[in-house]
Each structure stands twice: as C-alpha cells, then as structure tokens.
Length: 180
Image (cartoon, rainbow, N blue to C red; front, side, top):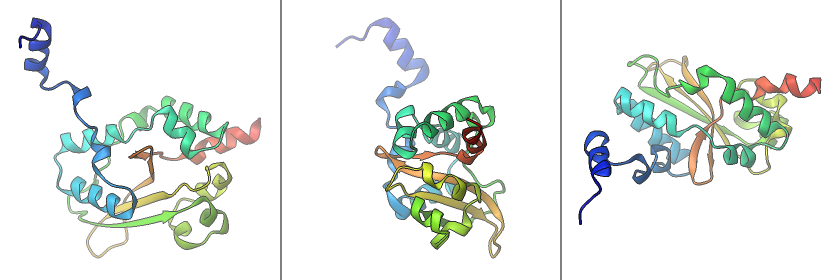
C-alpha cells in the first residue's frame, strides 16, 4: 500500500496524526482511584507530558452541559474561553519537592449542606451548588510538600463523558448571573 506523498511527509515530520491517538485524559478511570493514577502519572511525567495531559483536560461544550445547568453552563464556557490563563494551565506540582498529595470530593448536595469535604473546596463552590447537574461528583486535589498541608491545588475535576475534565473557578461567573 502506498501513502499519498503529502500524508507520508506529514507522518514523517509530525509523527502519527493526533486523531489516531487517545487523549491522555481518557487513560485514567473514573473515581478517586482514577484520579490517584493521574496524580501519580503527573508526579513522574515530563513537562511535555504534563502539558499534553493538561490540554486534554479542557472541557468541550458538551462537557459543560453535562456538569452545569443552563444558562450557567454557557456562561462558564464563555468565561473559560475568554480566560487566557485557563488555556495555559498546566496541572503539575509547582515545586518538584511537592511529592505528596491529598484528594477531596463533593457532590452539589454536600456543597449545599456544607458536609463531607465541602470545607476543603473554595467557598465559591457552595455559592454555585444549585447550578450543578444532579449526580455530578467534583474533585479537588493538592500536591503537597511532604509532611505539610500547604501545596498547589487544582479544582474542579469531573469525570464526564468518559474522561476527566478540569473546570477551574466556575464561581467567577456567579456575580454575572445575579446581575441579570
């Protein structure tokens, strides 16, 4: 079988086309165990691998609709689209010596009641608890310095549509909602 010359050079220069590869966020199963696997991977990954995984954690418009109720889903999507910093988020320990980690999880119901791990999430999550779809589980984790509670935190990670997605700071649009 002969490949057209343009495809041959594309594969030769760029490697296997990206559509043939599974995004890294699909490699980790649902739940706390899957998130622990992802964190372990991030602790040992190269900067390039961390960046690739981080890019694959960006939600699609469909992911927003599964996690948030409308019109909040559209507004969080637009906010993330405008947020240049979000595009460049790399999930990694900010210091290589942050080798420990801790994970917390909540549901919209536990956020509303301020029970379980709700106190470990930024307060803005409690303010927007009514805007999450029922049944959603949100995770937060921190890379920690050994023996300490301080570290680099990431939230909210949600397993949605068969993969992990990161929805940082969705409460930032709540003020905008109250104005309308």
